[in-house]
View 1 (cartoon, rainbow, N blue to C red):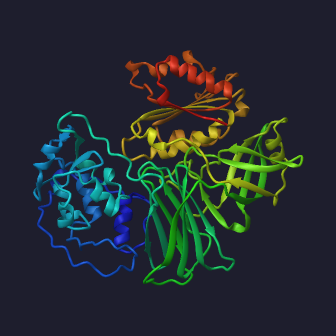
View 2: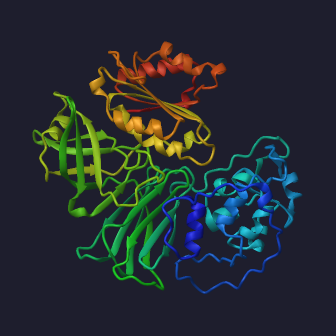
View 3: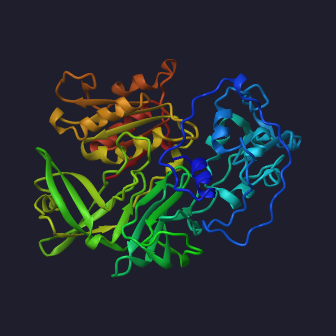
Length: 534
């Protein structure tokens, strides 16, 4: 579901649709550009049954979001520049400050919003506040979570640049990790939604906890993770909701989190209750889980399925992060880091299924001399396992400017890579051109998630995958090979247009070292490489 769609659904107090509207393109001749007429802002309302205090104007007939999508698909020139993308100085931007000639800059990007005036939910007057200048601060104060690159994609003119130096202005992060995320709430007749806005590319994590013994409940705790900093929100609701939540959705690109609960009794709420938010910093808390199932995956690996003890916690792990599992062994406690299988790495339009997933699944390689993997392999259903909150040093924002990304994985190192594939392909700003996975194993039987990767290959042609083993296979994706400069060199020939500008690596220590050495020899810089340490 796009943020623009969500915005419209919210203002109409309807349940958000599960995906963005698909509208058939219209011919330019069948749709005329709108003639903008000045709107009058209505007086601010004293409150909102949706919980959303932002003022909105009633849109004129024919100026809904669907109509805007049709206009964007019509082929009409909404840029006013003939579609040319060129840098814009602040001086030039300031000249386009009228209702019939309106340019605006948001986070270093300049858009011609002249034809969007009558489609703007806040009205023309509100949009004109940002016209002819850099409106980033104003935009973030009102609705930073709106997916403006998609909404105004056909209006994009170019990057904002400094007048004197001519260099492009890169907008700084919207909010540092230690600033409490902004909170908002909305509702439908049956559901209550809590929304938390961090900042773009923050790649947030979250866990939702049922802190009361009774069911249904009025008491909830929600913790939001931004990088290594946790923010806690304690809720005392005015009415009861059902547990577990219907959905816990995170968007790594926009930094938005949405938690949806079913109301115990349907009907409108005049208020949600109250909450206390605080910056918690780092957390050393151990979450209690129990083993739901443990099944052999192949000859030397197994799948472990954990469920929150008494179904008290729903956890979402940021992309590229891991958790530590804690097990007793010979009178002492041992910890080992593992990357959970992401919920939404299989093909589909949504970033995450709406149905709540409160279990955590792992694929684990079994080592005869590995104390933790051995204990976990022999564990019985119902056994208590303690797990840390998510950890990891990777910042997803490092990938924002890269459109060709290389994934190098060996053995169990495939698990963090699975969390990247689908979110990268769904990325809406600076659209990905190619994600290429090179997966190395000793034998064909060692390959994890082979069939699932095949589904991803069919789902999006921008994703490619080749398996490398020590034995030949009949399938096209199976090749014999070892990681090294010779194997990687063809990917970095400029003439084939497929040169990769960023690489993610995960595998045994020897594999990681060989991969880094090969990439360095091929002129890749240190800041273009990230290695996940097991």
